[in-house]
Amino acid sequence: MMRTYDVIVLGAGHAGCEAALAASRLGASTALLTLNLDEIGRLPCNPSIGGPGKSQLVREIDALGGQMARITDASMIHVRRLNTSKGAAMQVWRAQVDRLLYKAAWKRTLESSSHLALIEGMVDRLLVDDRRLVGVVLREGVELRARAVVLAAGTFLNGRILLGRTAYAAGRSGEPPSVALATSLRELGFDLQRLKTGTPPRVHRDSLEVFGLERQDTSDEPMAFSFWDAPRVLSKRHPVFVTHTNEATHRIIEDHLQESSNYNGLIAGVGSRHCPSLETKIVKFPDRTSHKVFLEPEGIDSAEIYLQGVYTALSPAVQQQVVHSIRGLEKAHILRYGHNIEYDFVDPIHLRPTLETRAVSGLYFAGQINGTTGYEEAAAQGLMAGINAARAIHGEEEVILSRGEAFIGVLIDDLVTKGVTEP
Ligand SMILES: Cc1cc2nc3c(=O)[nH]c(=O)nc-3n(C[C@H](O)[C@H](O)[C@H](O)COP(=O)(O)OP(=O)(O)OC[C@H]3O[C@@H](n4cnc5c(N)ncnc54)[C@H](O)[C@@H]3O)c2cc1C
Image (cartoon, rainbow, N blue to C red):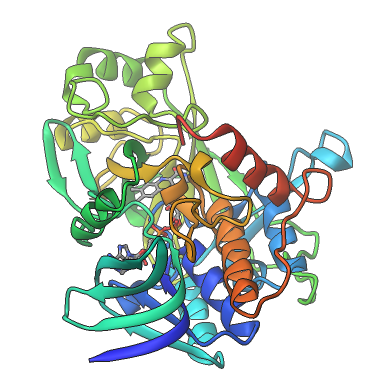
């Protein structure tokens, strides 16, 4: 069985969704392939969009015809302007979105798009003829032909979840890794390296004692991320609370560092300096007796609370001690344990500024596979890869944003000229 498209997008994460939408909106017949159609646009870590360095990207994606801002507006439950004591250039917006509404809004948008076919399946192999991409082969035995492929496989390439002294194969929590695809890339000559990222525990809202904690309500200022949506004030029903770690928390971590896969040699991948684990904060800043912890709601119909600031890969038993040592969380019921994920990426120094690989024409890389981390960074790259893939097929000029024109221009220029050694 063989079908032909102009563009195949591999992966329906934040890069893949924008890439597929951009290519199809530009008139390219497009197929979007993903492991699970129910997980389109999944936010595997914090259901939060925007914030420092990121909200500008969301606005630029919107200005360029992308969808992230509109999906955020449709699903946000709490939004604030940050850095209000600083000047206008430093101020950013950060939204907490409903995880399920966010996914549903993406699925609805993609399902109703012209020229776009959604297909559930696992791509095992890329087909290349004389250094030109010609198609993909699915594990299910289906062969699809295309003139361009945007590869946006996220954290799935040889993915492994790690916590405590345990490690197991996974693309992310509850989903399988992409092993054959990583082998296919290696066979094509790509040099795959390892990175890691982490996620904190989620706790049940009803097991918390928030009385006396600082409460942060959604803003009274009407807000919308998209230029197309009317700004609005959200209901105050989903506040964020702020608590802190303390000396007892830090002592537990110091006493059990070997119980963290961050410190017991289990992990080979490099992590982000900008989003350190709680273990790393305590090792690197021993003079600090306290760190902030934000209790962030995951959705309107969800009792899950995300412990922003408690990124950890400690064993479950120690995680429980750590969580219970924090004010307001003394009786917290952990619904999901924090963990790390380690995965393969390809150094983007080998990409052209259009995000097409230099080694194989018609093959574009976008998102986490390029060594970046973050939904907004992935979406920005996906948008540009999708635009360029479609334009190349139509014989149109490339779209390359300059550093002076857009943050996206800086992001991509840094990736393709400096490469990546950490996420
Ligand atoms: C546990 C965890 C913690 C994280 N923590 C943070 C954090 O603290 N801060 C932060 O900014 N970001 C974090 N991230 C990263 C963030 O989730 C990513 O940056 C973002 O989702 C990347 O988007 P993407 O589109 O590149 O890939 P993803 O969103 O990962 O999407 C990948 C897509 O590829 C598909 N796919 C993979 N292999 C195949 C295949 N062979 N065939 C077909 N489809 C395939 C998957 O089904 C999926 O749809 C974390 C991610 C995880 C998993």
